[in-house]
Every structure is written in structure tokens, then in C-alpha cells.
Image (cartoon, rainbow, N blue to C red; front, side):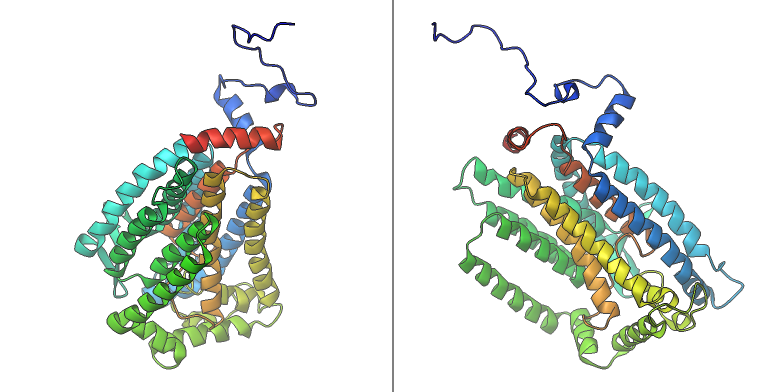
Length: 410
């Protein structure tokens, strides 16, 4: 028997039990690409997200009369469903962004995120100079369409950071923690010029999760946690906005009155709520359609529906974690975990604020609150998550890990 290697390439032989569609193929049509996308996408996660967006549409319909009348000085100005109709338009655009992003291959997601992160970083640097000011904070750029750069920077920052941390697979000696930490420091510094402490906390939290999953030693995690506490103390001492919000949370001040009113509104509906458009406390609530929409849901639909929304967010987070159980590619694990941290972290901060258990942050409830930048950015985040976690259902674990590892080395 000859042991010499064959001179030509070996033909593709399907593994036993694999269907023919698992063989390598190059899509020839848009319909075929869509069929492959539908086969590889996490359809359970997509269904949970669509359900949450439907809940958000109903919630904005409930909150719209309060905000429309407040902004127009009473009935007869803006229509009671003004924000509801606008929200449906933003949701439709968001769905286009979500589906379009989820169609992208993982390699394009990574490379596109790097370029988009650079563009949003430049936009973030321009905000303190030429940005629009709303409610005492300068967080928006108006380039024909007003948008908030930090909302779009968050998801691509996570993807870029995951890519940087995955470098250690090629060379464990690379200073990946220092490089990603320097990027984080630049972003946080720009955020505090607005000031935007809430989003800065989300950036730091997502980065902390990523470096922990990347294998940061426990002692260094403790050092970083101590450094974070020092930075929070510094923000309290040097930034009036941060000090005002924290003092208000501890008792007293306008922000405290708003959060206290939100908490009372939330509890006013009891377990089953007063009914759609039958709530009265929401009419006194500022930002009812954005920051405090969870309280409006509590008054009009009851605490049981509020609990259902919380469970829906938990289901989305757990679904991603289940999806990652058998994933061995470091980039995929880090990117998906970081995006889930952003999404779930913002949701639970908003809910805790409405429950008067956290200082007011000015954050929307993801995919539920009204907002153009917020809705599209959250759909973009979910689209990235769906693209990164796509997998061929006919390939085994070993084949998936091999395919992902090739992507990590690129």
C-alpha cells in the first residue's frame, strides 16, 4: 500500500447524515441567498424581537396623547396619536436596517463595523462643537436628519473590541486589553463632554464584560472595578449633571420628583391596569413616550404586562446565551455577549429608573420607547447579533468551530 499523498485535490464527500444542502455552494440568486439566510438565522430570537417591537407600538400609542398634549400646550395641537404614527415609520425603517444587517456575512460585519465605528467616533467628537442641545445636554448632530452618534457607536464599539480581544489567538503577548482600554477611554472622555454619563456607563459595562470573558485575571478585574468607582466619584465631584442626578436619586430635586411620579404612575394601574387611554397620571409625566414609557404601561395595562415585558427581555438575553453554549470562536462569543450586554443593560437600567431603584439616566427602553435614533440603533444592534450568530443547522459542532476559527484568523 502506498503512503504517498495524492497529487490532486480530494473531492468533496458529504459526511454521513448530512443533507445535500450542506455541501459548499455559491448562491446564484437573491431568492437563494434569502433561503440560506432564513435557514441560518436564529428564528426564535427574531420572533422575540418582533414581539417586543409590537408591544412597543402599543405602548407608544398609550403614551402618545400625554406627550403630544404636553408639547403642543394642550388638546387641539398635535394629534393624540402623533408620536404613534411617527413611531410606526421609525419601526418600519428599523426593520429594514435589522434585516439588511442580518444578511451580511460575519467577515463583512467585522470590517464594516471598523469603518462605521471610525465615522461615528468622528461624529461624536463633533457633537460638543456643533451638536444640538436638548434638555441641557448636547448629544445630537443635525445633518439634515438629527441623530445621536453615541447610539450607533455602541454596537460597533462592541464588535471592534471583540475583534481586538480575539487577536490574542494569534499572539497571546499582544496588549489587547490596553489597546481596547485606550479606545474606551477616548470614547468616555468624548461622552463626558456632552455630558452623557448614562451611555458612558454602558460603554464601560460592555467593555468590562468583554475583557472578563476574554480571560482577564481576577486581580486585574478588581483593580478595574476600583478604578471605575474612582471615576464615578470624580464624575460626581466635577460634573454638575452627574451630581444633580445622584443627589436627586437620594432625595429631593426636580429629577427626584419626576422619578417619584413615574414610580407612582407605574403602580397606579394595579395588576391589570386602568385600560388603554384611561390612565390619568401619565398626563402629568414628562417624557412619557420615551424615558418613562414603562410607567405608562404599568398604569394602563397593569403590573402583569410589565412583568411580561421583563420576561421578554430576559428571554432575548437567555436565547443568545443558549445560542453561544456550543460556540467556540472567541470573536463570535465576545461580540454576541457584548451586544446582548448593551441591549439588556439599557433595558434594565430604564426599568429600574421607573421603579425608583436607580438614578435617572435619560435612557429609552430598547425597541419599546419612541425615538428615531434609538429605534434604528437598537434594530442595528439586533441585526448585528443575528448576523454574528448565524449558523448552518446541518453542520456539526466541529465543522462550525472550524469555520468560525477561519473567520477569527482573518
